[in-house]
Each structure stands twice: as C-alpha cells, then as structure tokens.
Image (cartoon, rainbow, N blue to C red; front, side):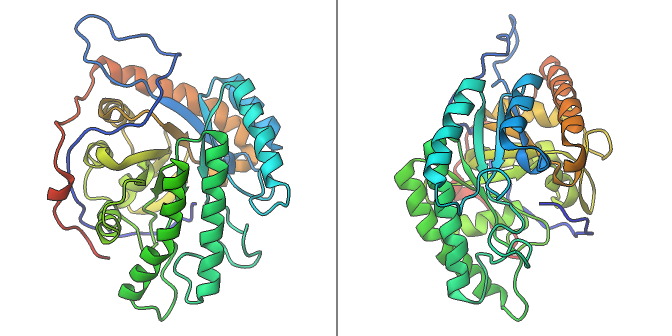
Length: 341
C-alpha cells in the first residue's frame, strides 16, 4: 500500500530479543574466520509491483533475476482469492514455485479485491459487522492459501478508522475481527504478520504492541515491518526499529522513503542508509523474506525488479563487512507501554 501523505511521528516500544523462523539460504557463503555469525538474508519482490505481468511471467522473471522468493498479493490479476477454483490454482502455483525455487509470503493489500469502488474496503474496522466479516473471510482464505503454498507468513493491516467511529470502538473491532483469523493461523501453523501502516488505526510499532497485549500475546501474531515506514514516522532509526521488534518479526517489506512522507521510492531516491538496516536484520536471526514493495512503479516493474536486487545485495555485502550484533534476548512482558494513537 502506498499513498503519499505527511505523517507525524509517534513514540514506540523498544524491547530486545532474538527473532527468526525457519530455513537458511543456499546462495550465501558462510562467514569467514573471526566474523560474527549472522543469518543470510533472502530477498523477494512483491507482485503488487508487477501487476501488468501474468503471474507465471512475473515468477519466471524473479527466478531469472536471482530473487529468493516472492511477496504474493492475492488479487484478481494473479491469484484471485475469490475464485471458485482457488484450491486448484493454489496447487498449480505451489508446484510452479517449487520448480522455480522461490519461497513465498502471502500479502493481502490488494486495493479493490473485495469492493470495486472502495480502496482497501471493507476493512477490519468497518462499522457494518457483515462487511468486517468479508475482510475476515479474505484473511482466513489467505491463511489457507499460505498453508498450501508453504508460505512463511500472511501479511495484513488494520485499515483506516471510519468516520464517526471512536478510537476505542475501532480497537475493539480490530481485536474481535482478528481473533478467528488467528485461530485459523494457529490451526494452519502460519504466522499472521500485521503491518503498521501510516494513516491507519494501527500505524506504528507501538500500536502493534497495543494490539498484541489486547489479544493476550497470541503465539501466531507477528509483525510485518516495512523499512520505509520506519523512516517515515517511527522515532527510532530503521536499524533500531529492526532490533526492537526482533521477537515478533515475521515479514519484512523494503523500499526507500523520506521522513514524514509516505511514498514508496526506488532505492537511492529516499533517505534510508540501508547497510545498517540489513546488518541489524541479519543479526536478529530473521529468516523470512525481505520483499521489495514498489506498487506504484508497477508500470515499470521488470525494470525496478532488475535494479533492486543488485542494490540490496550490494548493501548486504557492505553490511557484512561491519556487522551489527543483535542485543541479548529480552522479556516481551517487560515491554513499556507505547502509543495508543
């Protein structure tokens, strides 16, 4: 998701701990003598930035370019989550991903997949319970797709607070709506990774912690960290954000961005210093995908996909020459209270 806006900063929690999921990448050499052990990073590209390509063509492109995986947005032009033959399509896609050697995470940020007239509508915060249920159904479908694909996480977001809805009511709606999704995620063994999104009810890392505590810190609730969003509005630098959320990190999106402006930019066009971010990410032990998110550059998706991976590999190489060590594990229950905005 990407819409240029000017956004104020909010306070956040600052816990410490290690993170991680499963798998290590075969494309990286082991560290040399005296080099601290870090987790090799695995890069993907989001299909929301390749919307003009057929899905099979997009996957073939990413494999040819050397990506480790793909951030698959469930949408009508690629894998339609509302299609009658979704299960069959998912099986075929699983075989194709396996043949290409691509990992996958499932993303749910399609703009008009549920409502052709309301961007990202209906949301988990919709005043109409039937409309909230439609979004819940989409997320449960996404969990099932993710399980069938062997995805490492399902991404989601809160949505914007509807007009005339009090904040406390919106938070209650969010917690209630996510409960059955988390139950499905637990059954499937797939983490649900909520993304703090500028302008949404859940906009910051601190807001994620508010939700986590409200739900009782469920095992299958994790975080999608968008590195650009950290630059946009978090009080901590992006590398510090990575270290702070390590225990809950289940998915990462990455692009360049400027402070206070929510606009996803190609690498080198914003303000982020990427080697420290990638060093921090590797040091946490995170083993999921780090997915390039450039949805508004989809008109030139193949071009930006070709440019992005060498940039990230170069930044990763710089990072490994001066790695940032992860802090020791902390107690998540000791996390200080954060923003309630």
